[in-house]
Length: 344
Image (cartoon, rainbow, N blue to C red):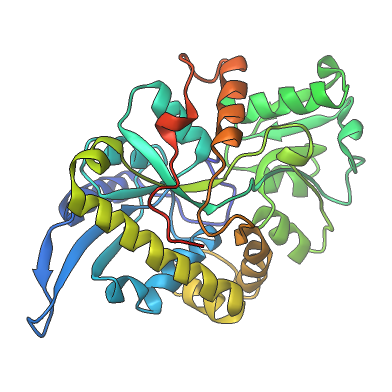
């Protein structure tokens, strides 16, 4: 989970954040219907609140929209950027938006807080957060973190990741100097102020460093001792799924269309890169296709598009509880379901 990003993006100012909030509230259709231009069919207006501004992680969403898969499913989908990455769980829980894109850790935290959300499918079914070091660093493996300066964005989840990684690899935590650099993970590495970072994504920051000729060492946190988890998930309002048949159908139709978008990305990464380039602002146009190429294999799900393993979710929730990242234990059955995914 990444709430602060070191990407070369323009951050939302106060006015932009306010406008984003207004758009979220006004764009939400709550599954309402409106006639199409011909008046012969009905489309369901559907607002999906993203976890962040459009970026390579969202390539399947925008590919599905560009290819007309949502429209063919009878959905008029608005993909809305949030004013804060924590907004999706809050606004889906209160019913102010129909669906959201969030993170598995954030969804578990929401469950522990009693928010009315459930993950209905994995958008990026594997972890992206990684330990990253440039070729100028002495860090080439996890044991090399002994005595190192490691930068994070200052998030509690990242601190817990680092603690677990050091313990699992028998590295003396007392020898590691943790540095909070906020959004400046890339800069901290490029300037050599730290030996490694934890918080960057292997399909974005690592690619950016590679493009700068810095030949990074990239170790996903789940390859270093952190339990497996899905980086990005689609969330829905749990109680509404139980009570509203129309909403259940909307979620099924959305996920079926998204599965087609995901398949299109896997089949034609170049077209997918061109699609996301139209909406992802602040990225080097020469590097963005490489980020998409790095993302594509991470979208493959051996169990079928969107499928999530409740046992893995339970293991991760138990780990979060042990790390005191959540105040109350969470049952996986309460926060994840595969019931609305298309048949594999």
